[in-house]
Amino acid sequence: MKALVMNEQWIEPAIAYAICRFDGIPSRRAMGFHLMIVDEDGSRRPWSIVVVRWGKKVLGYVNECPHNNVNLDWERNEFLDPYGMRLMCGKHGSTFELGTGRCIEGPCKGRDLMPVALTVLDGDICVVGVRLVEDDPSCNI
Ligand code: FES
Image 1 (cartoon, protein in one colour):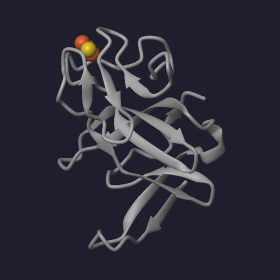
Image 2: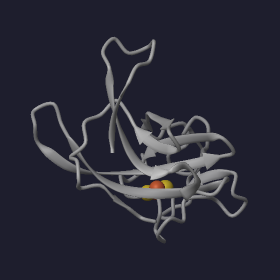
Image 3: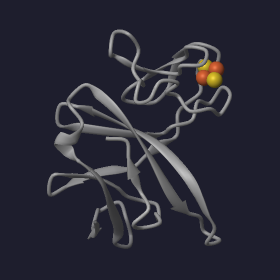
Image 4: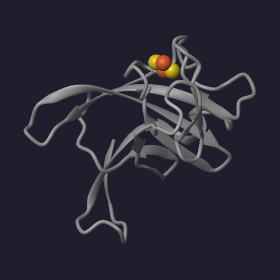
């Protein structure tokens, strides 16, 4: 699903791409999505993101550890530390604040995950601020 949305920070209307139902991710859980993004030059490339739901909030980050540029989840959809309070990279164990994406422990301490702009529209979690290839996103639900 695609929708036009307005936000006072955006000069032009942005396209919102629905990737999942809001209630498709339980609170305090994270889920990965493998999408296809269209770059400014028109080329397409795979784009993996992780979405964290915390109560009524949703947070998104590119699923790429700033240490070795690998996916964070070494087990499918296992993104959180054992306490469920931080994102964690499965390769060397770096942990990241949920709200900021800042690495606070591990080999990439002080570096940040790349944020992904999300919004919730009509019960759907939507990606905004990028152009996606339609009819290609695949949810890991
Ligand atoms: S690759 Fe993520 S902590 Fe090393």
